[in-house]
Image 1 (cartoon, rainbow, N blue to C red):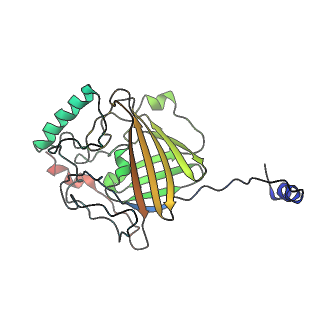
Image 2 (image 1 turned 120 degrees about the vertical axis):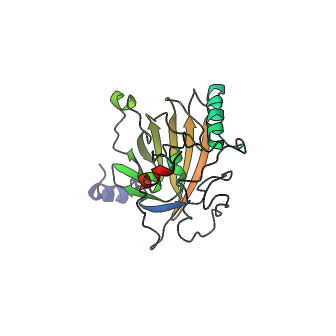
Length: 262
C-alpha cells in the first residue's frame, strides 16, 4: 500500500511514484442527446424531431411522449443500422412488425408497464439518474421507473442468478482509467435489443461509459447474441447532465395507463 510516508522518501531519491487516480463521479440526472436514434419513427409528442447536436446546448429535458413511449411500428421497414438478425429471429421480427402495424400492443412492453430491458433502457426516452458509490453504480430511468445496478466490488453472477434472468440483467463493472467497463448477462428474453428487434437467452452486453467532456456522458454499447445476431451490434448513446431546476425526475405511475393498452 502506498502512503504519504512511503511516497516522500521515494520522491527524494528521484524514484517516480504512480498514484492511483480516483474514478470520475457520474452521479447526477442526465437527459439524452439522441433519445430515439436517427431513424426513430415514433408515436406521440416529440416523435420525428431531430435530436440536438452533440455540441449544442439543450435547455431542460426533452418533451415527454403522450403515449407510453414513441416506438417505431415497422411500417417503414428496418433501418440500415438495426441489429442484423439471423433468419429465425428475423421471422420473429416480421411477426411483431405485423402485430404493431395492426395497432396491437401485444409486443409493446412499455405499454404493459414492463421494464424496457437492456440495452433499450439506456435509450433514456425520458431522464435517468445515476447514483454512484465505491462498490456500486445504480441507473434509475424515469421511463417505467426502471432500475439497474452495476456492481464494482468484484462479485460475479452465480449459477442461481444466471438461471433467473431479469429485464435489466446482472451487471458487473470495473474502472479502466476514467472509463467504466460493464458486462451484463442473465437477460430476460421478453425484451428487445432496440425498437422491437428480438434476442435470445444467451445475449450479453458490454459497455464503455466515460465523460467526453464535463457533463457530457457517453455509453458505447456492444450486444452479442450468437443465436439472434449474425454479428455483434454496436450503438453509442450520449447524455447531457441536467442543471439545477431540471434535475428532478417524476414518478412514472405507468399502471394508470394500462386501460389504454390493446
